[in-house]
Length: 307
Image (cartoon, rainbow, N blue to C red):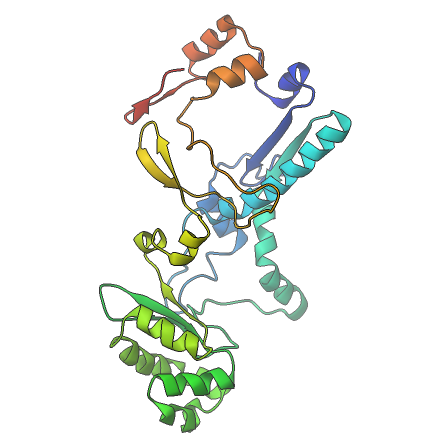
């Protein structure tokens, strides 16, 4: 028995198959191998990420993987609802290249309508100044600051103890601050280095200025907001021991609250259930695939899990 959709649907007509590849199952580039790290280059994310005087910088991680998972979840929900109503399964096929372009729509539309090509500009925005991250007191701590209008700019100058900045011609308006942004950022950095990121965050937020500590990975687990919302769930993992798991949901439903009852599975942990219970494969069929390596519970050099 093969594992393709047509073969499996003969056993389970209501099966739902989801295929996600870099460029989809059709077209001249459908056979190109690739990961999310490759797809970000195809989509154009790398070209617009980074600083104008440096080489393009790819977004952190396999960015299109994060984007496409959300689309996949919605597609699967729709397919499950269709199956509930009709008893029929279906095959879902996704191109990460095409899906991720939804998150690049504004630059694409700007080029299509106005002929403009977006360029790298670091952390800066055309409608805000200052707008960026600035180093603070301590070991590699930073604060993100975004001044979006003149009222915030006036308040920012008062909070920093530099009201004269607001009266200088070179900083008197957004357009002037954009022209002199390099100098402005140097002045702000000289101020932020004297305080912790938490101190600056409190002062600026109290003054109505968007700002936030740039947290390190370890800081996230102690974040009071996440703690209050019970974001991390402690569970015992058979290999890693007690771990804090993310619920993989950014929302809470009143009637069906998010829950994590089991830790992430080990490699092949559910093989027996899937192949025997769902696919109705015999022991002989499973043995053949174990011999040829298409079914396995081993990841060389890491750990082994028995069925």
